[in-house]
Image (tube, rainbow, N blue to C red; front, side, top):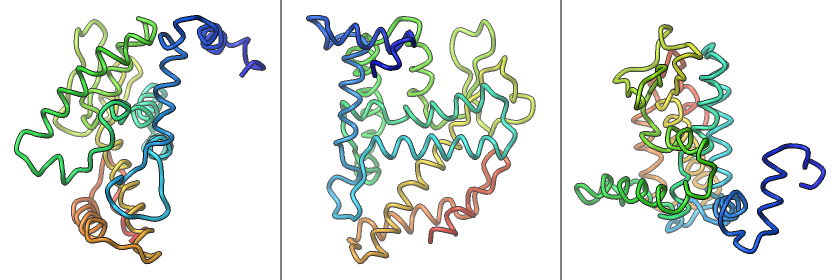
Length: 235
């Protein structure tokens, strides 16, 4: 990292590393987020090859960016979709990877987990970051699968009930395609399940998960992009 010390953020990170309270600030943030590299996906389900939450985040971010290019997203929208994908599971560094069937097994559990994640972000993660960054991180991690915009002067993001359209495709509106990020998130899980099944490790949770995700997304078109074709390709 030293060779990039001319970059302000890198310089601040390295400076924080040498402080006595280095667990606070940017170095503490990187150390905490780095734990996602050792946190397994599908932790309670036998599966090969094993993948990490951190690797999953990068995959989702890259796929969201590529789809953004395909649909002609404006620069700010591409930026938001990439970083929204990169940070969408950030709270899991505190709550761990709780699989969807568990979240849906008890009425209200998913909402309770969301509240816990938001509280944990405010208490443990956001204080590690410069004040100027916190609003953007909230934008990426709260309502992460919702389409939204931040019009100039608006006190809170505006959640949209439909996909972003041409009228929202403007840098001034700070658009983010949460549904694209969700589709990429589910595509990643679908590919993980599909590959493991092909390799002969096929517990019922993977078989059911693959089938349910395919049923939901194989005909989906999100913001004009036929994401369902990707699910067909990896069947």
